[in-house]
Length: 568
Image (cartoon, rainbow, N blue to C red):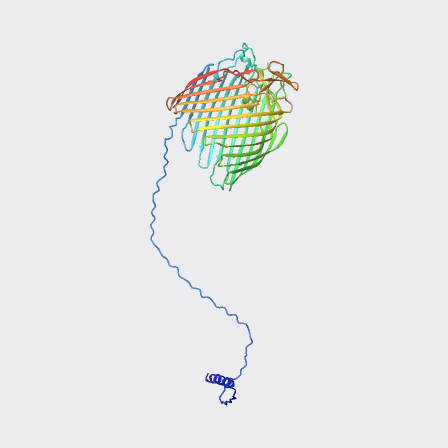
């Protein structure tokens, strides 16, 4: 180390001297040792050094601390109402009598409030011993009874009923008041049952479904002659309906599968009792499958439903139909204005019972066909004007095949019965409605409809109205006095006749008679003495108009009925 310092000092001095311009020579003696050389005996190689990271283990400490759980009681929520729920009574009875010797009786019984079970019975009778001046006897009676029950569980409902209806009347459309009433009498009996099972699981991951089963037997009266006892109409109807739906997010997937069989029989098959009257047997089955998707968007303001109706009509020959299922709705301004548009269609299975529900004065030997609505396009808008007033307007355009039309029969009767003919037509319908409701005190509904028909084979849609105005109103005064008013106006109806008479026109070799304007008004008044006893007065056909709902079948004039009701 000393040697290196001396060497460094000499260099400094040398440079200094050189800088001065004079040469300086220094002589120095020292000992320098040289290490001995040696030979490396190992070959060169790459050494990869891995430094291991020490792993520190921490022992688990077992700590046991005493804990104490204390539960606090939660006070159940209570709901306070201004009024307590009204007391329910097991039974309700209504008894009355009308001016045209019309007795009325009604009885209703159920099990009142129950979380799980419901059951009861409903019985009703209405008859009339009065006549219509200048016409054949017009007495009638209507009797009905129903037993019903159900079970309501957390995840499903099971409902069912058994009914029996019996209706007697006369084909009084003959201007002859001395005719034998038994010769124009008719009676329909109707017995059946219906059961429905519905699931309502709240978990959206589950499927909800409904299954219904229905059976009905419908019979007309036996002919007066015992030898012709089988020559009457009898019908058996059985139907199975099912619906499956699944909710995924904002979409609802649904599938309906329905099957309905109707067996209509008149007399004996392949047998005749006259040149024009022969036995009729018709077995008809309709099966349809309806898959559809319903979706919501824009915070449920927009709703769309798209699907298809696949229908098989197994009649004398099998026919397959495809109908659209489409509807779009959009809510604007918080439901103040809701425009909608859609397309639909379907096959309506006509039965002898459904046809006589429209017109009870039908023959019993009918050709029953299903009504086929190929398409029905509709659009409109609905909404609310104020919190008390709502409205709806719509227009529809439908193309219908086998539309049932009722015409006067002169082949099997003296013009006091009706037959059914079928035609293809286009129907345009324009409808508007307005509703007003003031809490539970006053309610008013007004509905107006206009119809336009274009038929293939007939000049007019016989007995169908061209316009309708329906008004319904109810008023509650101090929960003591109640009033209900129903108004029905119809016009533009025409009937097919076979000879010229007053108010008839001839078009396409068909004689059409203009039927009178219908102005039917009914008023019902009720006074409730207390919660158990009340009295009522009912006024029917206030205008006293003997209008003809069907050709040559006028209705009864002004009628009044009074009675009392009891709850116990």
